Amino acid sequence: NNHEKKMLGEKYPFAVNKLLSIPNGVHCRQGVYCQHQSCKPHHFLCVGNMSWKKNLNYTLGLFYSLKKKLINSHLFTIGTGIEDISLFYNYNLNKKDITNVSRASFKEMDKWYAACPYLIVSSRFEGCSLTILEALSYGIIIFTTGIESNREIIQDGYNGYLITGSNIQSDLDVIVNLLNKNENLITVRKRAVKTARDFSWSKQVLKLEKILCKE
Image 1: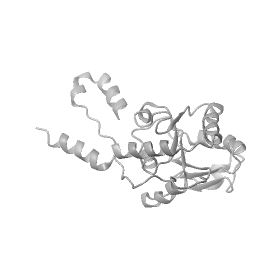
Image 2 (image 1 turned 120 degrees about the vertical axis):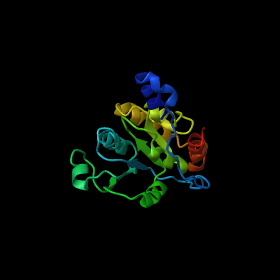
Image 3 (image 1 turned 180 degrees about the horizontal axis):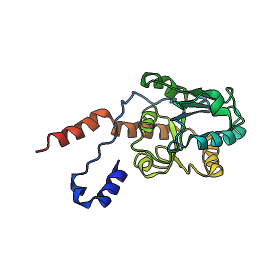
Image 4 (image 1 turned 120 degrees about the horizontal axis):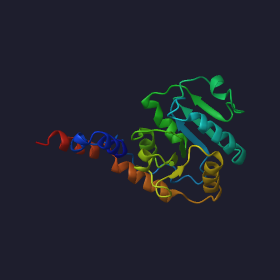
């Protein structure tokens, strides 16, 4: 991403003019997910393993508090790499609250994106997040940490929402206040889809071709 490109340029100034950034691409879809649903379930998606980088322990703590405010909410944790008993051990949560899929193929992801109108990304570090781009292509409302790479994709309140990833009360307020307003978020969903189209594979391939064909 551009942030890493800048950091490398500062560290290796002799190579700054040779550094190029081509982000991940995404397959775009027609229409906007949930556009015609009158009642959207409080289903939250989280994708990633239990590493320090993904900060999934924080997501679980946030959802524990979120469940008290939105009693019908449900969390789908995909690709955790661990079984249910390990995931629930430190939290007063169970299968009624969380659907844990320890491993999922790329082809399976479609059904999980389609099941969840909301995505939580608590990462401490990311490149150009493929999960965020894929979620945008479905028109999913994204709550993500405001690290540099994520801010290159998400504009707070425009095509998604930024959270701290470190302050549960603050992040809880952002999510609960937005959902309790019961506002129609279709405009944000449309902007999300538009953002995904700006990162479409066709556009990214053209950028790559220009670089590779440059004399």
